[in-house]
Length: 189
Image (cartoon, rainbow, N blue to C red; front, side):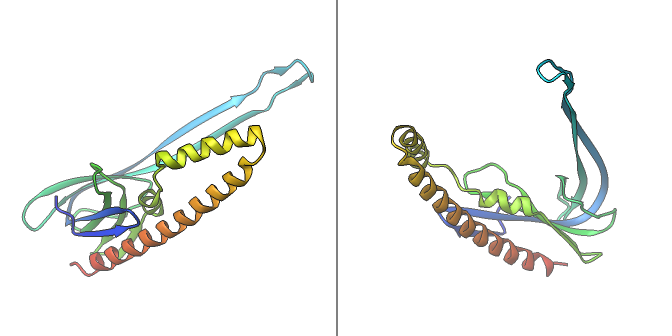
């Protein structure tokens, strides 16, 4: 499927794709992952070790859309509380970094209800900075410099501040591009 819009952000090209159609079928479910650890007897202190249990719940939405040309497409979106039902007209927006086979969902616009659901994690995924070999080698060299002379701390701080600034710039640029693409899909009917 050809991109509906292509933008250049930093040193990468992001292709925005959309699909608009009527909802044919939809379903929603949740999954919960539970993990725990600890417990047992601590011989040194003579006390029981505390037990920790954590859980996380993920909401999944699956729906099928048919566009005006009769093409059907299935979407399964996790952690993206989408409210759609059969007969609603919906547009899905996702972004792909050029050269990758797929990318994260960014927004779902329900034209029937006027609701727009966005994914901050999708925007963050598109704005993630790649780790070049040069940067990786600089981190490794800085680590060894800490071990030898302590000078690596300065180098690590400089690297982290630089990457943080680059990340903020990339995130702002991607957010702006996504907002522009969302403005376009809001006008679809």
